[in-house]
Length: 258
Image 1 (cartoon, one colour):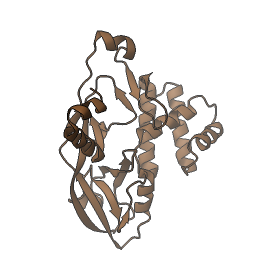
Image 2: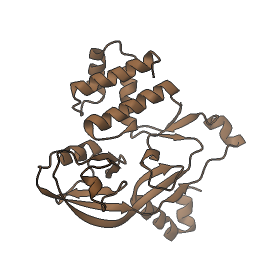
Image 3: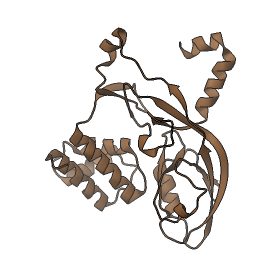
Image 4: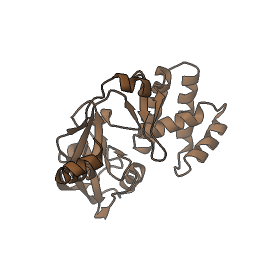
């Protein structure tokens, strides 16, 4: 049933569905738990469950910055909600028990950051002065609810969608497409690039890591790769050391060393 058919049948229920969608912070695949390793990204397996995590309790936390690093890894849902993906054990933020993995960061020192990308939020947090108090406004996710059941293979879908070994690629521009799953070696390289993003920039973004891998897999040297990155991701100011390490991960994948 389409959204418009649902509207004709029950407009009140339809409005409730829309309100729930507007409150979604992020989604996880195949688990209702706030599991940051199972976040919904740009690729969805054809038989995946999708669980939505919506806005819950708001909280305001004051933190005294005693160290340069807060121990946070930030990501976002691609539509303006940045949230905490990981908290490093033993870090400054780890000692503040009211700050939790999965919390949406709504503002920093009174500045609303809704609409910011995760790398901008990470930069803002890094720029906070040491030995000063800062304030975070956070929103906890509520218990998840399932918004889409597992698709069942049938005669009508088998010919149109595929065998289940592909993934559904969602794009900010253009239609969704079904693509082949990356090889095991490519997947390992993309995971390594994602780890490097966290190490150097304090963010995790598997789609960004995939884009970087695609930009470099047909290049023959790091200079060509750096040019391709500038053309593809010109808004990012990647450190030279980071670019070199990413090129190393791509090279290892090409030579089958991963």
